[in-house]
Image (cartoon, rainbow, N blue to C red; front, side):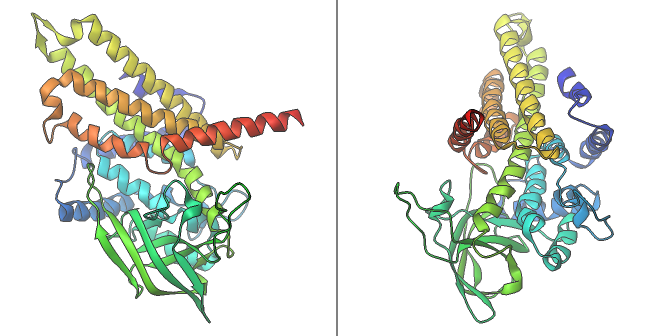
Length: 408
């Protein structure tokens, strides 16, 4: 526990982050009493809606929106900037208590992030205060049945009309699908362009805000996964979207999506660290009490070595996570560092939780046990907001690019 209670002394943080984390830990310890839901879909939806309201009333979801975008904020430089360190700290803390609470918080930020980054003043004033207060649930609608990691392959169309656009197509794997009040949707406003190397260009993609009540938007299918949270396929059929609901200029959607992901991937790393720390805490407590061959499990050198590897991996992931967040908050180029943090934290958390489960033996795979739930909860983090393999490509490409820049 020493590592998790002292890392706030690292120079990445200032007093506001330490005070924030202290308050959140107290709140979470009393308000989040472990997993809040059963695996029943309706119960999960209800719990997620309630968690968004609770997080909003407690003041936590306001960090999902840049402070300068809220009513009464001071004007000036940096008013549209996220506090990425706060986002990662909040997700680490929530993930240590309840995966659904972490999900509810994280999706408020990701789902509305495109509005924060590219929305008109009218769109910001209409949506962001409600997101910050937990009064409106947001969703990020990018992935499609044949376009996940390869965003350039998306086929959802936005055809220009006299007063806006008509959306046609499907989005899938949409978190908060079915409970969201609005969706940030990415669609093609011009046909795909095939480059000389055979790859499809990301040009011609535009972003929109679409209210859940818009005629032509429907939930085509609810999706169940091993880690229960609201997830769905969203269909658009002659869905009329006014011009004022467009985010940024036509054709800027890909850049907006990548900027959004680049910010919130760091918070995914924070959540992974939280899951891993929870697993380590459970493993230390269990191994210290579990009697085995006249000793406790923790007395065996094999157990101590495993715990040492787990603790070291968590601290390494945490260092990468908060270095990336710190660089982002300083306004520095950090795409590679963010990818390193996301990849390392999620892969490390998977290994830590797997080793913790092994220490629990048969109890570790029993449905409803803490470690079993963590084992299911962590798996998706290695995929969403850029799979591990995508992060490797980002790191490698950036390394080659920076090396070439240094030579010129």
